[in-house]
Image: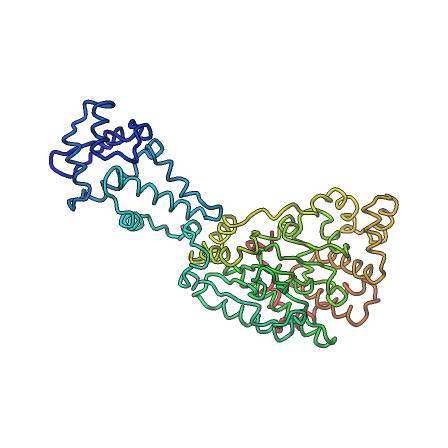
Length: 510
């Protein structure tokens, strides 16, 4: 039995004092206008005549005394107190839950403060700030500070020191600043590559975060990644080479430390390979990508990822051959390409809370961040691709095994259904059909190649397409890739293949 001792000869158990409060129905005696003495007299006369009134009065008279009991005993009694049955405590709950916006951390803090206030007023003096400091000092310190996932701070109050372990690459520093004039230029790609490369060799950074502050405003219409430069054939050739080097750098960096991309706006299809160069992608409701944009310039963007990372048969062919499809966060999540989804209006605060987990040192940083994604993510909504999965597997999957676009079109014409009529109307354009045939042929070949070879094929076929878009798909994808690989990365082919190929433990090899 735990005892409460404040003056010699004045000893009560926590159970005795709790009974004093529990069985006195104050509301029936107008408790707001009764004194402590009146409550004691009423309790002794009507509830429990065995209680020693003089000892109880002596104890209550010491409520403001300086001869406090040992704090560890005081705090143990406080934590053991039965607040669920404490009279009048439920009235304080309205103050705890007075908003829908409070985080779990804030609600827990409010509840603890309410308990401390009640206990101090009705049981014995307790200083909440001192109790909180005592509890934090005694809290176990784990090897990996996962408590950052739950010790959430209010938005905007994150300590900069806690984010010193994260290298933040802000795309806004390298892209055009005027709406409508955004372009992912050769120079911008090279500067982003240099920023990423510098972070790879800095041991201070446990993780790299790629953001775009131009997209942070709620009403922003800015692109997260705009179209890749293709003002001339020569500039297109150089920009694509630089972009592929950036993708390789991101993948290699991702083997040693997590690279987190907070995709908070539209991504042009020509630059989607940057997003897909990491498995740690967090999107918002502003995110979108359409593979129909920039297709006449860069028809094979992110060829390796579309060919190998989608689980269900025919999905890659359906996406590649659908000129009107826009992938949003719900589709992205349904395809298994993202780690989380957050509301754009909460982007800044949620991003800070997620990146707090990067203070967890290697080798646990990646795992800590992924637990943070799970804690902060919400449901993005149903995928509009998933509902068509039976039709996709039946009509589009055969193209992965030798079927042609012409055979797909012929099969759909025979169905005479509303959705097939709409699709056939969309793919009726001859230039789009050439893009679709090239994509299907390239993905079919890519599935039997390693990453570095697919990268070289994407580069070679895209450049050949720019020079002769009317050439057959088989001619474009079956050209030599040896020189392309060296041109993208420099150096000898064997060394390049060794550094670029993805090891089995890498998340991209799943």
